[in-house]
Image (cartoon, rainbow, N blue to C red; front, top):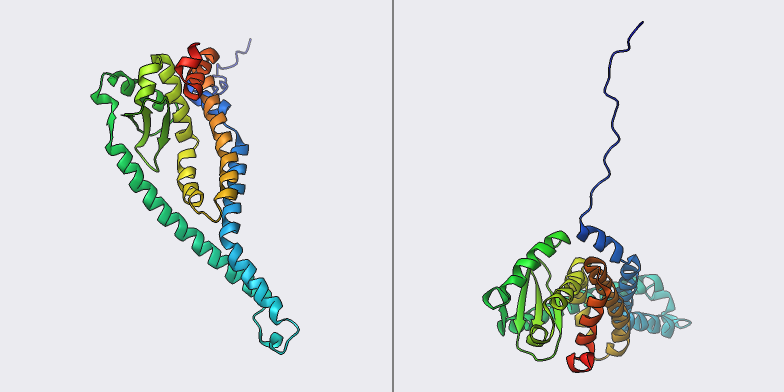
Length: 257
């Protein structure tokens, strides 16, 4: 009887293994957030270009039908110049605004203390492990004196910063505090902090603040929901996240009452 030589049959490729943090990030993400952000920036661009566009149109139609019409600059060229001028103004506003915002944030951090130098040094170690699990760069956590329960994240590059109000340390349980920090890590992971750095200068302009505030506010509400989803999917404890958010938004006295 002929025996076939033994050969190793090819093994199916193993399915990629994802960490808990990677799965949570993927489940909480909403691609439509980026669409809303793009629309917001386009809206800001046209707001900064509106003056130049209207001026170009007014100059074009004011000479149309007159003896100067044959010598006027074509409308398409006027509009290109207007858009270029708007883009230049857009960039100048971004650069000036980002400079002042960075100065203000450095001032804010000057009155804050890193948790590693406090009784909450454990929070730094936990944050380092959690940030790595979520695929984040290094995150530094600060505490600033403020009795209101709140936290915020900011930063343009490594290291990113999360600032906790002292009220959060006082009134939140350790697990609730972790849920709040994960929420803020969500803003870093989905690059909300970077986008907000670019949006903030336009919110400071008095002549467009009402419209720009509405546009940015719509996007910001969506980012809060996305960060909440990350806290929910990562902790897998809806009750914990709910209690933490209730305390943040309405205060500990009402939440416990």
